[in-house]
Image (tube, rainbow, N blue to C red; front, top):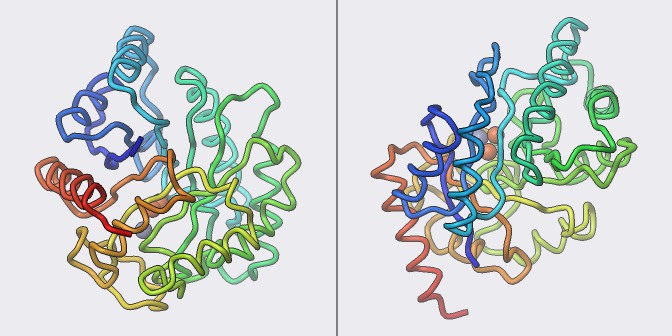
Length: 280
Ligand code: FE
Ligand code: FE
Ligand code: ZN
């Protein structure tokens, strides 16, 4: 089963997000757990959750991929910012239990001059503070492009964070195609090689979700500007090989392309059709 959907901008509850996704031709989706710039989360409406769970079951949805606010920085230099990250993640993880067994993705952080090693330790420390034995959610570290002082710019840094987390079974990785391309991984000419490297350094069993984006920039640019599918330097063919790769079957593919619902509907259809017609 191919699970594909988009990061939905609709924030009118779980049922509406699912309905929008069904209209778009999707069977998974991503969403911000709260305003992407932070702030308070909307209250959970249990009726809404019930309707969502029924709908997702009926339409055979794959796992959904919640996204933490991108202002959250678990390795900030200022302790009050780290406290915000800690509280936000802990609260989000509590709320995630209303929709059990899904994914919570976050940007590892920016070390803002403290150095990657300090950043890695600080990120792992926050994870050790917020992960609980009882949670059914898997927390995903997103692979980053390495712009500015981003941590998670290569597979080694992701592995280093995972190594320092106590509750390893609660952790996974979300691979963003634009970010790894911008980070210098050639998924266009050597997808097998990149996945082999991921397997060697992190382990493919940790790869739980993919952000499927084209890139406005060249490989190794460390820029992180998403392009529409087929309109960037990665291209449609390479992205179809990603969603068709035998090692990546069953995991959710999330579009974070600069689109509206009409554009995402077209991309989802194009990707599904291209994957069906792909001759390997
Ligand atoms: Fe992200
Ligand atoms: Fe992403
Ligand atoms: Zn990005």
